[in-house]
Length: 120
Image (cartoon, rainbow, N blue to C red; front, side, top):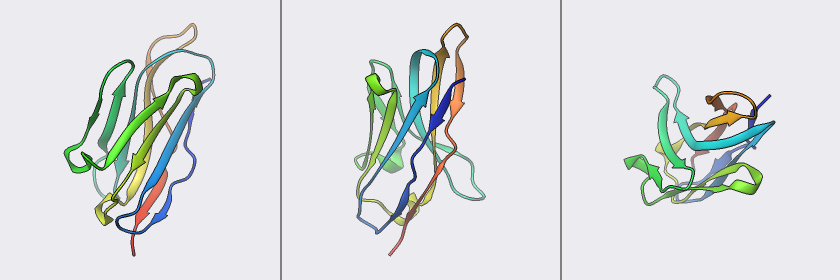
């Protein structure tokens, strides 16, 4: 059984920074892609950042230059460093992974989501 666990987000003032993390646990053969999505109530979930294994990260235009995705392969953990946060960054953030469980087939897994609120 594979699970993605996201420690909590939090409340931060505009211009501040916050780091999210997401760890994949269980019997995993390989992780091909890890990504972060976010969703505001009443809107569609959108891709924020994505990191292919051994590749370069990609970002949504709205967060380029402010957010950075990184990965610790030894810990099966992906991070999202968020800098210069803006009120419009307020959303529920979800970790996503495309991975192959040991002895299984490739599939997509989601974290439970964590709230990030940017406000004065």
